[in-house]
Length: 131
Image (cartoon, rainbow, N blue to C red; front, side):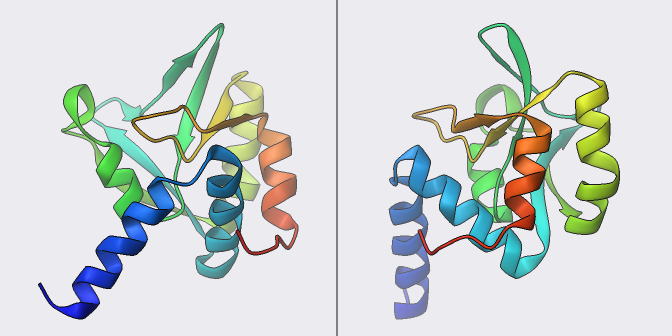
């Protein structure tokens, strides 16, 4: 394994092992930098999670994290980037209309941070501090 690969792998593991709040900060920083939000799609569309009484759309900051989550019943899903301008103009209003929440950066260990679409959108528009 090359040093670059080892470093990328170490970063990946380090980020996954952060607590939900730090992953949330990493999410906003990364989305701000790359101007896209990652989701998982299957043949029926966007993957959804049930969290207590609510349905959530899980989102990730980069393809690698979305793909890492696509195991088990989601192994046939593909990661899809949503450009930030499309997220603001179409996804936020659509999620609000459908009464869906957002599961920000879930991992195998936890569901991530659950936000209302308008909260997520507002934080996406704000400059966030480093995780």
